[in-house]
Length: 631
Image 1 (cartoon, rainbow, N blue to C red):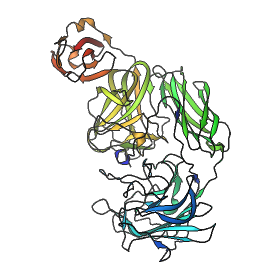
Image 2 (cartoon, rainbow, N blue to C red):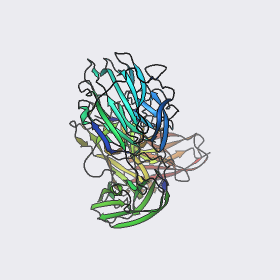
Image 3 (cartoon, one colour):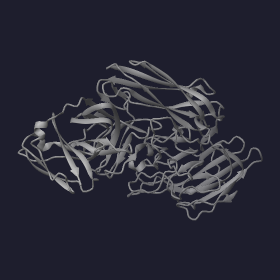
Image 4 (cartoon, rainbow, N blue to C red):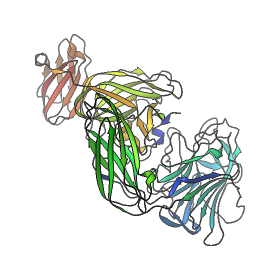
């Protein structure tokens, strides 16, 4: 199944600079996959015991704050109340979530928000036994709460009764016509249980649907949530496992051919946090490095305080072994519980072949299982890529005509792009075509001016579950420093660019646009997709040709709003024309499309500030530069 970037978008987050970056401290969420249990049990309906929870309707509504009946500690805070959503979750505390229609939607055009991925400050401290777009089932819908037992061992049971998943397609794709389930909160232990009753299957065609099931603390980051994962709707509920971070291409998939067994229970037991626990969260660097154009290499290491006490003078070490030898230790002055910071390391590579192993470590502490991460990097003369190894985790794209997915790269000097190789996952839509674009980097760190656009080409076909690549030759296109390579889909089909999972996904590197002008960082979507696109570089081969420049006319000069370029017969008729200001910033790029016998091209400069500009014409090995004054 292809992942859709656009329909899994969450709100934007900040970009990552190349210096030390502190992240805000988050509350200590202490529920982990290792302490989650999937077991058989007994479902006991509340009947008429307890209290009915009133809501404005049985579709999209939040209740008023309800009493738990005791103090329940979650995500570092003691709560005595909760707010119920008719869409299968509760928020601890007295304030409601950000909206009444919070659930995953995989239908193009949806405007509702996934509560797990939401970065709205109201969408925290969530307990989600079955978060979906729910509506009344065949029975009378009801929401109820009942607290039983005596202190300090009381249990608060919250029940959703006679609900069903709402259809969002024709014919109906509703899978359950009636379903009941409960969330249980346990005093003192702070255990949480989800207990499910029997569901009644619909007569619709079996089709996977995608509810959220799990716990959310302060965010969807790794270590800040705990999600129940069932990767196929056809699988039994007994096969559910548990993960942290964002869901991949599946969630807790359901369908009417695999109903929950009555009493199926997911139990979440909190872990006791060590006071001293530094964790290596991620390594961000290139998977393929060009020794000619990419050295020195930058690697970033994310360190998180996973303990209950502040860290002081915490050290972290990056070691590179293999074709390159490098070791460096940096010190973090202080790091609050739940906070993360990013360290930047820079090292040279000299070998033209071989493999590097990057190992990031922190010293032994209260929990040693999270003290190390590794990353494998291959060396070549001229290739840049974020791909590490040969395994891929999925394919992603957008189902909108003209969309572009872009990947950012950086050279350490002048170079030229000569080949781009995108990897694609699975079968292609019949007639699917795409283009390769090369962009200069804009001042905001996103794709800017287009430097080159390839002709449209067919997306290579492949069998389901396979990866195919397409080697695209690029005419020697100069780049220097930061630049981007984009994959533009001509039609409205999801082109399926292959990716490797990176959690959390590095910011400021992978982008998409549906407009061609407004870019969104993919790390603000639910996809942790490190895109598979290789770039081959070479030296810039074109040289300045003054004799040819003398044959090119440009008038009027100074230009008032526009000027006309007169090109003689020869190679310049299809040259790339680039207009740059006095600071060297590219303000206009276009491809000439004149007859081989020569001709004229009009340039509109009415939107440019007065000043001196350089017009560069590049064709093959020739470069012509003309001075333009705009008044």
